[in-house]
Length: 295
Ligand code: NDP
Image (cartoon, rainbow, N blue to C red):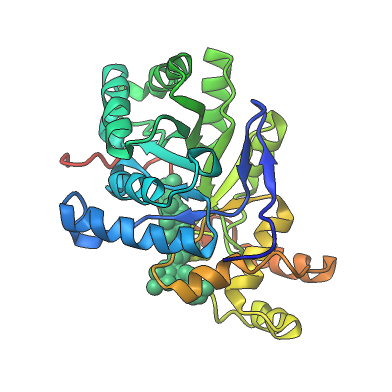
């Protein structure tokens, strides 16, 4: 269990979110959607809770909601101690499916309320390009009281401008790919203009650049690991992060980033590793159109 307190970020709707959490992509592996997969997710998330994580990032598409809910309930801690996020799957964009799948999500989680519901991808080339109707249906859920905040994920500046312009409702968060090789600067600027907090997915770039010499030198100077230095860089830039690990030692190490500080030169050296679009590992949200079960 970590001893330092994880800082909270205040969102523009007045709610708060722990800046450092735990990601669940890929935890159930091939067993996703089965009792074995749910048990594996619950086991790993219970380890994360034991390590000190209280903010957990899930998604309908990860098939981790049932396991996350199970681990939260089994922890014996009050529901209010946790911050739970999940995301609307790409096959649930039609307004009726937003409502139906939200009910399924709440059943899966088995929790009285959800902290944050995100639209996972904008899918601008699907559903007649109408991610605005999807967004409106998600914001309508706020009246229900069982979801506290709504936001988006993988939204480019134009997607943000469109939903804000057409509905007047600003997402609290935009969860996007962001790590030292991909600073995602245009999205960052757009989010700052609208007071939208940034969540950095794949904050460690899934471990791809842990051997980077610039990061290695800074890590050696602080007696830390490269992963810890990268997570520290995110936190000092104000990003919200939730590294994923199934390994208890890495879970603990990824939380132990609150008791050292990178100086300006170190931060700048890491920020200078940005390669623009060439640094992107995941799909480009302008063209990504994957829907489960469809070509
Ligand atoms: P991360 O950048 O968190 O990296 C996870 C990988 O790095 C795993 O393979 C893990 O392996 C390894 N790892 C974790 N900690 C360490 C460490 N200290 N040292 C060395 N290796 C380490 O990648 P993710 O893609 O999982 O991103 C984090 C979360 O972001 C996801 O789990 C998900 O919740 C969210 N996400 C959202 C997306 C979106 O479209 N909105 C897209 C992708 C992710 P091991 O488990 O073996 O430790």
